[in-house]
Amino acid sequence: MRGLWALLCLWAAPVAAVTCEDLAYEGDSYTVCTVDAAIENLRLFHKDAEGRVIGSFSGIAAQPGVNNLAFAMNAGMYHDDRSPVGHYVENGIETMRVIPNAGPGNFGLLPNGVFCINDRTAQVYETLRYLEEAPACRDATQSGPMLVIDGALHPRFLPDSTSRFIRNGVGTSADGRTAVFAISNNAVTFHEFGRLFRDYLGTPNALFFDGKVSRLYVAATGRSDFGFQLGPMVAVIQ
Image (cartoon, rainbow, N blue to C red; front, side, top):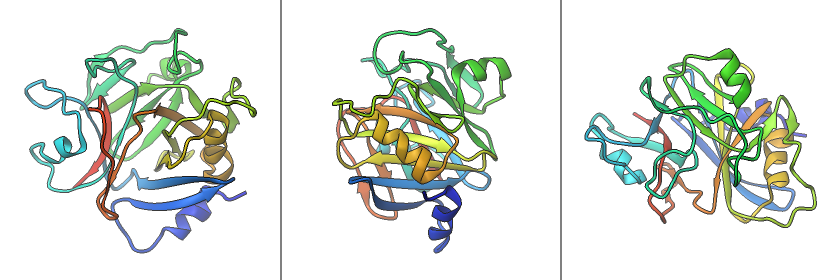
């Protein structure tokens, strides 16, 4: 078992806004990016100042005040018009309420969760806990299902599942300082993806963002996935 601390030590140099690594775990390939939420400018993006959906990594880079886009990833499920399926807050403004009830699709596979970002912290909360604690989030996006909940895999994940997709998500450290983003480079099950966060990355809570449309941008490596226009996105800007 390899903990989050060991992984961060491996990535300690050189210092960069985001440090990413391609790795193999249990026969599957992943790209994992770690962000120090205490010092980096980690934010959500959905619409521009005129209310138009940004939709792409290049669209984030073109926003006023974004001098350098270091990292970006799709960050939550969205409808055909690219509006968020669940709770969404950007710069303190809520544009979609919390959805606490079960429903169709992966989003409704309870428990799901909320990724909450503030100026110096980032935390994944299970949705009912989020409603109970009501944290003040500068940015927040709801997605689902949860991958890891207080150190345990989602109870409905099956070890022998045959449902495999390219998947992406985020886990956070217990103190909220570190956010670890991962995308699979080959199709994986929920159980396999959850084990990556629980057993390899050591994040006590982790949240599934999406499958099928999972995409990643990393300036340092030149990776920029393309495909469908996106809804909510998470990025580190400078």
